[in-house]
Image 1 (cartoon, rainbow, N blue to C red):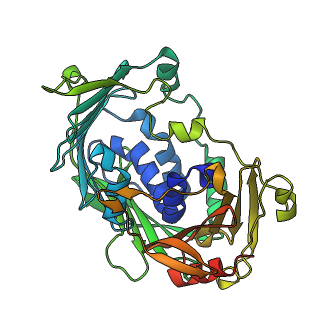
Image 2 (image 1 turned 180 degrees about the horizontal axis):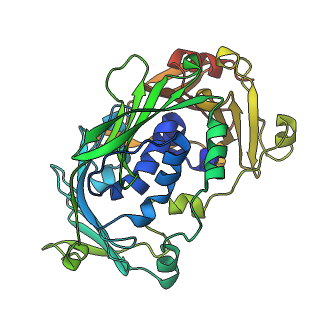
Length: 408
């Protein structure tokens, strides 16, 4: 567990609810954007050898252009739109972007929308972020320390022993299998499927990745929920074109009448950096009693976790919050608690014309929780007795509601 699960407000709410989807999406964003190479007939590889090659592939990615499409039915479109309404974000239907990649420090992404395009350009020295809905351009140069931090990581990729260790860690709760290679987007691709061993512990059915047979980078990532034939999350590459990208593609001309503002000098624009920079790593302790001595509020525990899950981890974060985990693997349930006035409470996302109407659940005693239910999991958020709570897991909404009502 990371500290973002304890005190990151909206990010924590969505991350806890999505669980494995967030992991797949991040892996796809970091690696899959670079998926390119000539077609090749797949050789037979063991799981550990295939994963070892996948881990080494991004550093060798060629220059390319491609179309990326993300489609999901997990988070309600109105919630995503409300969260991004200040920037003109649209969340209805598949999201498709055109990408140009020119190496570790050169990227251009264009997302088209009915209310105006959104464009991000980075050439290593300068970055531009344009919002067509508001005709606003944020721009600025990277300070030397930021540019240095963006250089490729020189740490060696995992060796075979480390891959074996990773497979051993997931083996008790997950099955990793290879299917028959397929042809996808003009490429020969390996098929990797990750599924839970205990199907009753989670709403997730399986996740699938298509791995390019020559570059060993993902061409498609998809997640399936139990009882649903179509993926609830998919990330796909199409229109791949390998080759040098003209230098002018990594510059941006100010549109007529656009408002130009500098990037926030105190904010690193790289995705995820703000959370990492301000995050305090929680350290695991043996018991809730030990965590109680470190925080300034009364810690509540689940009296009857769904399906008899047992308390598996206790992670205090200073005096501000604590995170409790129940169960393991795909079926882990997370309870995050913090002082209401400390910022641990999740503010309701606003929407134009009023608050976003997410369902409310009566927990008894005059306490109401906001509920976000998805095909692969449920999240609840409520305040009671000066303490904010977020409870999430890959279980049906009714089971999570019952557990929340029996919080002690």
